Amino acid sequence: MLNPMKRVLLLMLLLGTFVFIVGLATDLRYSDETYHFFFAKDWFELGHRPVYLKHVNDLEEYGYQRRYVDTPLWHYGLQVLWRVTGHISENVAQFYQVLFYFFLGFFTYLLAKEMYGETAGWYAAIIVSTTPLIVSFSVLLYQEVPIAMFVPLCLLLLLKKRVFWAAVVMGLAFLLKRNIYLLFPAVLFYLLFSKNVPTYLSGRIRKVFLFLSVVLVITLSDFVFRYNHFRGIFYENDKGQVFSVMGDTVKGAVVSLSTMMEVSNTKGAPEFTNYVPGNITNISNILKYMGIPMFCLGLFYLVNIKKLLSRKETILLIPFFLYLFLFFIAFKGWLAMRLLSPIFPLVAVLVSKAFILLKNKILKYLIFVLCAVQFFGMLAFVFTQRKLSVDERLAFDYIKKEACAESKVLSPEEFSLFYYTNSPSIWLAAFHFVDKADSSHFLWGDDESEKKAILEKYEIGHIFIQKKRIYDDSGIRHFGGWPSSFVDRLPSISFLKKVFENRDVSIWKVQS
Image (cartoon, rainbow, N blue to C red; front, top):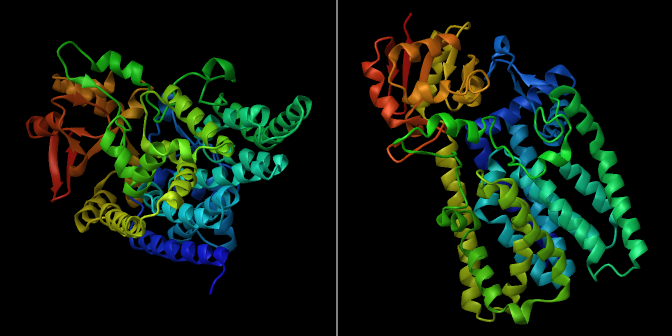
């Protein structure tokens, strides 16, 4: 009989293997993950941290290039792994991502075990590792699961009063993804005020000073790099004015929503909004990303909160509520569920306590079955969505053969298009840095000559229409895909010629 820790390690190894297989069997498909892949690839090839990505949203003649403004730890780690294996590899990248998934489940187990005992640790590991958000983003090369992995480890170290090592973990998390900044005040609050830290006020202040100092030492070089190359610490061109930007909306794209709205919300036109997949304002997304077991156990916890709540929960509840509060302030128009990944391990640990209280064995078995169903169901969904179709590959092959190296291809999936075709690509977001009106005038304007002038201005030779990215813009407008009103008008535009079409893609060439 395996001891409990070995049982959890075996569970995570088994689940991680399934996740890894799906990663190997699918393709780099989404622009964000291909962007992160390029970041690591350029680092590997250059031998130092790259500043910008050539040929994607590249308007150097107008003073704009797509810079690698993201925090660098994930990309640095991947290029180090490539150096160990000797070559750039998607398979190695998938393995790298699964390692974060493995340790997320294991650290969540350790935190729950420390707080509530072995059984709770086992339950917490199962819940967090089968949650739809965690499963899907353990296949996709995003940073949601890696940043979530750091959270239970940091809190576990705080519980064990190892403040120095907790600060090291927090500093590394700062270098991984910037939404972890929202967890930072909660940790400081816990060190200062929690009764779980039995020391005098002067001792608490010393611990806070130690924590701040270690985090600063670890992150300072990144802040200096960002200021020197991007003229900003939090955002590009914030000029180091940290306190003046701390309350601003965290940009999830390079385009400013407010300035877009100025030119898009014309009188009588549909409302302009952000394109945010998995928006938390859509209640159904909460259930989709949390999954039924975590959601139902959370409700059970709330119903029995008087019985379950104790002082030790402060290490979970302070970060949970402060992160949520700051999330709604900082992200405003970019309320994507995936940005909540750092608090998912906290929820898993909390509901593991509720799981223990559940005495009905049939309900417990039902929850285990639901965990298994949603785990394999989400992997099946990711497999169908992430795998390139034959028609998409044919379209990429066409661009690879026919697109001119001196012109660009217009596509909302500009990073993945460049990844598969090596043809310079661009999307409307880049237009904004030259003329904020060009994007909306191109999609919704009535002047045909103006549309042609915009295409010539940005040296666009082909328009790449992925049909799954067409949306109905009769009620809302956004720049996350192709408005159906624009696509419907394409055949009537005299300077555009359809040169390729199949079930998934149509390609239009710009005639001189």
